[in-house]
Image 1 (spheres, rainbow, N blue to C red):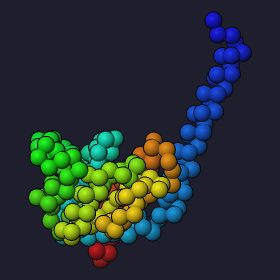
Image 2 (image 1 turned 90 degrees about the horizontal axis):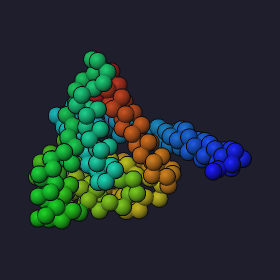
Image 3 (image 1 turned 180 degrees about the vertical axis):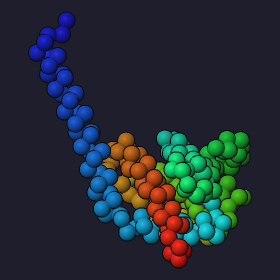
Image 4 (image 1 turned 30 degrees about the horizontal axis):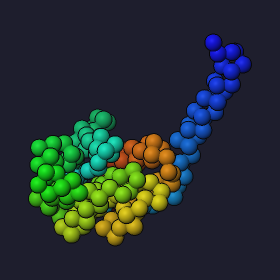
Length: 208
């Protein structure tokens, strides 16, 4: 049986762990958006210009970023705020037949690059998500997108390997954290902010 003193000690330790995680979840996004406000605004403007020309948002990521890619596309296609304009967006991972077929025929590293090569246009926006910044499939997808003239945006964490140093990105948003949970939290907030800011440009005539 655990003594009351041991129980209190364990509870205090768990509380400190929770508070530390909560503090990181507060401080990191604040620091990120303070440092990246100009770049977020510029990226939103360029995205709005592409949408204005009939382009689409093509989002992709592997592992945990797969669900984020699906979340981003839903935000743009089905606005949660009444009256907001519907914007075309596709999560490349939603086409499971193509993903599995390409994984088998071309290899996992090529699944997004091949999809973009076959179905994108120069007016589209390619958004690649990678928490650790070292996913080869995401990087190759963005490289292909750049070759085809798409606007390229990457989201990753601090010191995020190949993605952070790639010249294939028009905009690279690096979250200043090595905690994958915090990185993913900031990515989610970021694509909500991008969505909102894109609509601001649409709602002010003459900006585009």
